[in-house]
Image (cartoon, rainbow, N blue to C red):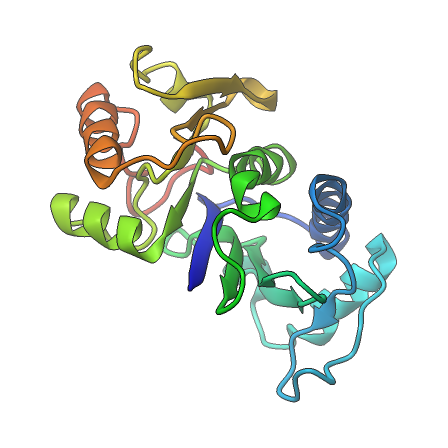
Length: 242
């Protein structure tokens, strides 16, 4: 059973609805370039799947969708939360959730792609390309830290290091923003890929050609934490990135 997540987090950052929509649109176009069969025909997240409305991505359409699904007070403080999903023939179910624009010192911003299937396994191309997806999220959303993981890997790391959900950690791949990247040890058994804004993806899958053991992931977390690359943002949050 497939259950893989690619995500990223950052602290307070004021953003307008059009600005969020621009980031989201660029992300969707980049995802389509990575795997067109999985990342097409996006549906609005409603309560009547599979008949939820299809959203044809554009900056105006996404901005309208964000505004329609966020109607409470103080949105400039608590941010905007919206999601889309897609499931095309022969592909995994994928959902993309965004929480952005929060300036609260106690609310984290995030972008999350989740892949789930009972028929598709981890040999599928889109999962082997998950570290590339992490890089895409990092570059379009300017995240502080992010990772690729399955449920077993996530639980193993969380339990070993006693981590909360938004705490930085390394899965089968990890993204580190510029100051975190500067602290990363150089000799992990991984492929190092530099990103925009001086970030770094450390890919323990070697571009999808290997499947790292839990022991390898735990050791990477130990070394990254010892180097200071996985330090938490201070709470209350006082900045978007480390």
